[in-house]
Image (cartoon, rainbow, N blue to C red; front, side, top):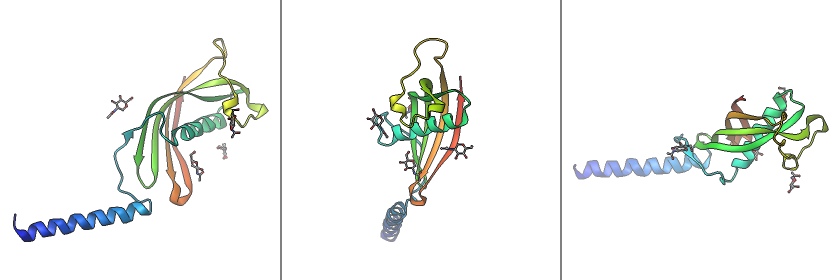
Length: 142
Ligand SMILES: *[C@@H]1O[C@H](CO)[C@@H](O)[C@H](O)[C@H]1NC(C)=O
Ligand SMILES: *[C@@H]1O[C@H](CO)[C@@H](O)[C@H](O)[C@H]1NC(C)=O
Ligand SMILES: *[C@@H]1O[C@H](CO)[C@@H](O)[C@H](O)[C@H]1NC(C)=O
Ligand SMILES: *[C@@H]1O[C@H](CO)[C@@H](O)[C@H](O)[C@H]1NC(C)=O
């Protein structure tokens, strides 16, 4: 490789690095592959709650459901942050009509006929620079 080629390569990579930095500054970072995240990921608990809120909003159940387990959680940087989550949500003892705002005050149903868990796949996209959140997928099955 000649010196000219080397310099050109160097220039290109410096420009690419600058471009990336400028881009991510505006939230338009290069799309990355989804990566596994830990259950303790900052933000994950909040996102998982959004799945329960959507589920409760769509269901005709007399009781509220809330997350009971996270089976898989991935995060992808793509014009914001996309979460890809497999979780379980279970029926609580809180009646929907009583309109409990705080799910953490709702215990799960004890073992018995009202005890029920759904397996859900949830894809949630947060676009902070547009102040926008979108639920892309929420599929649940018993
Ligand atoms: C609940 O669902 C209705 C109808 O699909 C929708 O208009 C409303 O914005 C939803 N509310 C929440 C809190 O998601
Ligand atoms: C990501 O997590 C899933 C489910 O826990 C696991 O099966 C998979 O091997 C993990 N992938 C990597 C790259 O760690
Ligand atoms: C919900 O209740 C829990 C436990 O009582 C409390 O720690 C938390 O601050 C409450 N959250 C809200 C939003 O009220
Ligand atoms: C988007 O969701 C996150 C996590 O639940 C929340 O902190 C944020 O306020 C939401 N933003 C909008 C615009 O709703």
